[in-house]
Structures are given as C-alpha cells and as structure tokens.
Image (cartoon, rainbow, N blue to C red):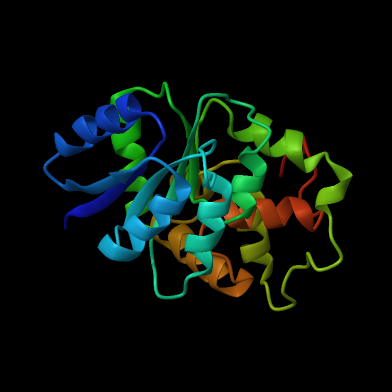
Length: 223
C-alpha cells in the first residue's frame, strides 16, 4: 500500500527537504505541498492524503487552526503529523488536543521521519520519543486542562483501564503486553477496543484523556 502524504510548511526549503526524503521511499508518495494552513486545507480536500506533515507556525492560517478544520471534516480521513522547531513549543499541547496524531521536531533524522509516517499510516500515533513524557506531563500540570466534560466511559473493563494507564506512560503494544503478561496481539486488541470506547482517533488522544480525567497523574507510574 502506498502512503499518500502532503507537506504544509511556510518555508520552501523545509517543504522541498521533506518531500525529497519521503519521495525516496518506495511506499510513500508526496501528493503536493502548501505554504500556509489555508492552502494546506484546500490541498488535503483536493488530494485526500493519508497523512499531512503540518507546521505549527504559518501565515494566514496556522497549523493549529488548519488541523482543527481537517479533523472536523468528516469526509476526510487525513491524519496530521505536526512539525515544530521547538521541543517544548507552547502550542504543541493545543495541537495534540486539536486532533494531531503525532508530533516531531523539524531536526528529526530522516529515518525517524519516515518511520513516523509509516507508524501513523498503520493506525498508531506518536510523539517524538525525546519529549513525549516531558511534554505531556508539563501541559497536564496546567489546572485549566481538567474540564467537567472529561470523563471516562463507565463500560471500560479493568484490563482496558490498565492498558490506558500504560498508554499514558508512552508504552507501545509490545511493552504493554509485557506489563500485562499477555500476547502482543491481545494487547493490540485491548488498545483497539479502548480507543473505540473512548471515542478517540488514536493513542495520543487517549493519553490526553487519561491525564484530563485524572486517571493518570503527572509523574505517576503504574505497578
């Protein structure tokens, strides 16, 4: 299966660089580029990519607004991989809450960028490993994040709740399986059912909900 990708960044050099890296892969096809969020939204509506690499800070319409528009469009299944120059960009948490499936630094090595595209295309989600826990915990500490509407479904099983706690610690399916003493396929099933019950698009959104509902506290670990 060919992964269709759009690149939205206001710097031509960055767009060209990302395009060159991705086009070199046999399973990835770059369908186009745009220099601002407004044009990026139109590009995605026209070409319907699987993934869009989205810069956060752009003129006319920034990446946050563009992401929110794309996620709100029920006719699209495009996933957003957010790119930024700063590992603790003040807008990153807002980007994740708006529906971005991943977050990477612009200086991420080429191989990690390619891997990220494939991971998200495979239905998973990610944050840059170097900032995942620090980022989530930093923003989760802000008291304004906990809202009255942030609740977990009543029908979550004990095992699904446990899986959510491990997800919030940044674990992948293999690591969750090891912690729960189950097979990796079973762990994947738990996570899949969990996302459906939570009504979220992917693992990143599940992590955010885990913090917002207080199931997981910043700096906590599950034993």
